[in-house]
Structure formats: C-alpha cells, structure tokens
Amino acid sequence: MNETLKRAISGTVYVAIMWFGSSFSDLSRLILFSIITLISSYEMWKLRKGKSISFHFFYVWMLMLSVFLKLEILLFIFILTWTFDTFAYLFGKKFGKQKIMPSISPKKSWEGFIGGFVSTIVASLILFKINFFSEYVSLFLLVIIGLILPFTATLGDFLESYFKRQAGVKDSGNFIPGHGGMLDRMDAFMITIPIIYILTILIK
Figure 1: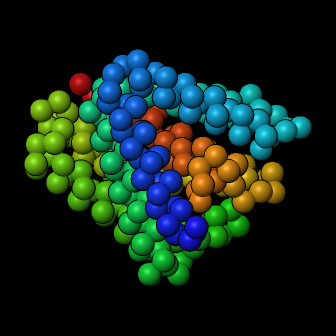
Figure 2: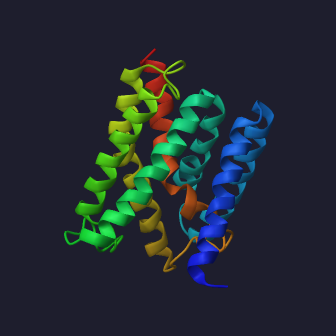
C-alpha cells in the first residue's frame, strides 16, 4: 500500500477513535485514555530501558487528566492540536528555512510554527463564532487555550523527540501504521492537557 494512503487511512481511523471514544460516554473516555496511557507507558519504558524513568512515567500519566476535563474543552483541544499540527507541517514544508532546534527535531521550523500558531487562533475564533463550544466555554478561555496550545504542543513534540534521540530511534513504536507509536501521536497532548486542566481550574 502507498505510504501516503496508509498514513491517511490510519490517521483517519485514529481521529475517529479519539473523537468517538472521548464523546460517547464518560466510561468510554476512561477506557480510551487508560488504554492510550498504558500503551504510551510501555513505549516510554522501551525508550528509557536502562535509564531513569520516574519523571517519564509521571509525564505520560498526565494524559489521564483528560478524564476530568469538560468534554467540550477536550474536543476543543483535539481540534486545535490537529489544526496546529496540520498547518505547521504545511507551512513548514512550503516555507520552512529557520529551524527551531535542528539537533532534536530537524524538520521543525519557525515558519511552520508561526503558520500553525496563526491557524490555531483563527480556528478557535471560528469555533466560537459558529457557537460550536461557546455555550459551554467562555470566549476568554477559548482564546487563552488557542494562544497557549501551539507552545505546549511544540514543547511536547520536542520533549518526545529528545527521548527518541537519546534512545537512538526514529519512532517510539509501530502501533499506528505510517505514523509510528502511540507516543508519536500523543506527544502534543502530554504538556497541553495538564496545562489546560490547570487553566480550567484557575479560569472559571
């Protein structure tokens, strides 16, 4: 199967499972994130085999805070994270010249980050404008999340890339065809979810 087609199919299935599993019921969300966290913990254990791992397990298990977020906020995080990743990739591929940290993640550029950042803000305002989440979440919180998420998503990506560099591997695993391991798909959420969980407590 063509690699691009494989990535597209597995990526679509991944998004569908994440969306359906999170929104179907509280139980399905608990089951979904428990499975994701266990798989991610196993992949992290492999990356850190023979090295210190206490912080790294704590880092992965922060994903379970998703269970305590409002469903609307969690879905908002999904949409904005996927928006940021997609447009950062597209802008980076088209215009990327100034690398952010080439020694850790050689493909990440400032041009890609800026393109993803602007697209994320636009997406958050559009979602509010069409009343997608505004009934449940304030405009102030949506804008704050939109401003912060590109930074937390990028930090999560760089952190996981650093762990992979230390382990001398390209991907954390091969759980998702064409995309690598579960950690490779969840890295943008690792920092984002706990930060936004704290924000939802501070901003009522």
